[in-house]
Image (cartoon, rainbow, N blue to C red; front, side, top):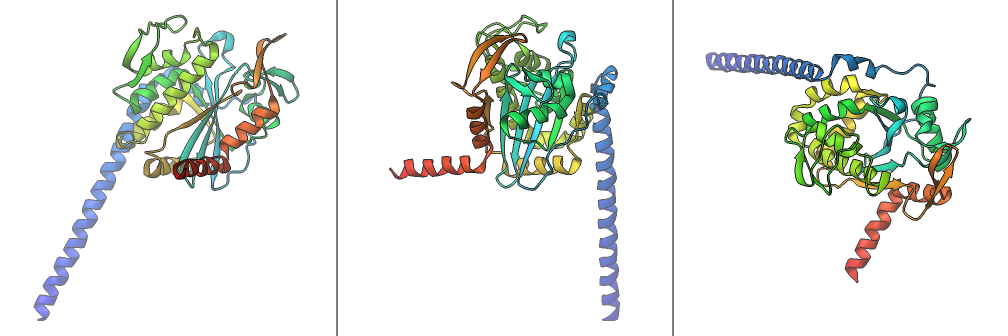
Length: 332
């Protein structure tokens, strides 16, 4: 009986030892894979853009609202550093909103020609705030004009956008191009449904000579990000996450910490797969008029109405009202 007990004990210890060795092997292999993929991603980025991730010390330190569990607002700034005449202006300006309770993602595009009061600089185009004071002044401007604050910011260089797209969607992003696009994007995109790689999708979202002026460009930006979001919350992206982090590093300046990124990513992967990206544009339809001032052509907005609509869009109360309305319609 003692012999049998001793044999069972030895087998148990051997099993534990084997399990530990397998776990150790997987851990080492996983770390090696992470490093390899990360370095592979870094190699995809151009060496001469390495300085893009450095913070610009000319600007005031970002003083975003204190992060609290529940809702997160991230100021998203697309910076086209290749355009000499606008290298310090925000070519795309958005607020990304994430609800940690519902895993819902909302995206607000702020038109760059919106005529707003920039603190200490008076009335200016919204995209001038970035040129004058970086992300902190953009945050202050949004807070002063629309009473919405953000906790984080992310400045993405458009040169890296195409590389990020190629990692997230190696087979491209499907779009339906309404007419030929070529002016100012160093390529020609022909009409029709097609899959665009990173460089082509960048041209698609940057094309400015739209028949709907800048409104068409903003709509294309929202379309591209919505489809990228759908691609991003997939096992393929999870598998390529180290590579994606390596690609992003040289092209992005952000104060979003790793813990917050993990929280958002985990929530979207587990609970956001079936949720569509809700989008909004500021100024909203019917709340602005064209105006010519010293700064050029601007959008003269009804500030109070846009403030109300923006806060309503970002609030849970708006979603609850929509749900109640849907229930009422079904009952009728």
